[in-house]
Image (cartoon, rainbow, N blue to C red; front, side, top):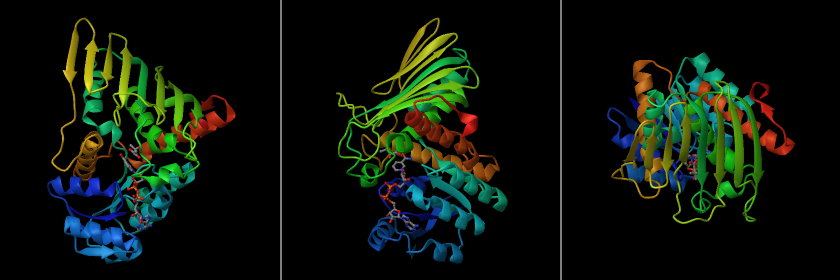
Length: 338
Ligand code: NAD
Ligand code: 89V
């Protein structure tokens, strides 16, 4: 399968390392409007076809899929262009800035009959997968309470300066992953309520969010996120879990320690592997990039809908919208109203 990538910035380097290690995939073309980034990346990954303009790259084609690794404001136009060119699409999160753009992208891919997947990779982290495996096996019964927690004081602004500039920050950038994990454990959501705060005076958006979810299946979740939590040891970028089920309980604690208690207790170290190109502490995220990109390829090969398809991601994105609406109106939001 031949692919082309748009956006050669901070995170795309991980995509390109992962593509290189996925059997049967070859990235044949790169695009970035910033020529320095484009040429540096092309050289590092030995890719000869380079473009400053995505339309020009799509017009020349000769690839099966597009990997969109740009920031959110460009997603709709790039996805619509790629769908019109008749290629499969994997697009970074946040998928869209609003539901209208997200729905339009899903419709464009459906019309083109092409796979559209959102690069929603946190549920693909191997520690999260290990916990999901326990719950989905039914060994401790159905969940009735989940706490999905991401609290850190790590400086994300040096690598991703745009995160300090937007009116929205932690829910749109990070909470979106944690809300998606809540959906993976307890299913879709009926109602939600949220509070937000900004602690860091040097950024525009909120850096703390606490979100209460009532799931359609009856479970309750608390999703709590913070980039203002200065604690030791620093746990970035670990998502910690407490999942209470009818016949037992599961915890994923700091240091990737998984404890499952039912009639007996089992403890295991579910640390992610350090891939040859990865670097701590990002290795947890980097490994999930490889896993989700493999899932994209497998979904196309088998003709099945990816877990985090564009259509599926509408439901995660609705939680993001609802959380901002709830925090600004101090009210509980019905997800079907989004
Ligand atoms: P970045 O700003 O470092 O890189 C984006 C690149 O895209 C830039 O080089 C820019 O010139 C280029 N670009 C933008 N619009 C373009 C267009 N229309 N045509 C061609 N090139 C264009 O951003 P980043 O930090 O790499 O983030 C990219 C995306 O990845 C964001 O949506 C971010 O939320 C996401 N991200 C995801 C994860 C994850 O774990 N899933 C982690 C970090 C970032
Ligand atoms: O995963 C992400 O989307 C990143 C970060 C971990 C920094 O929030 O932007």
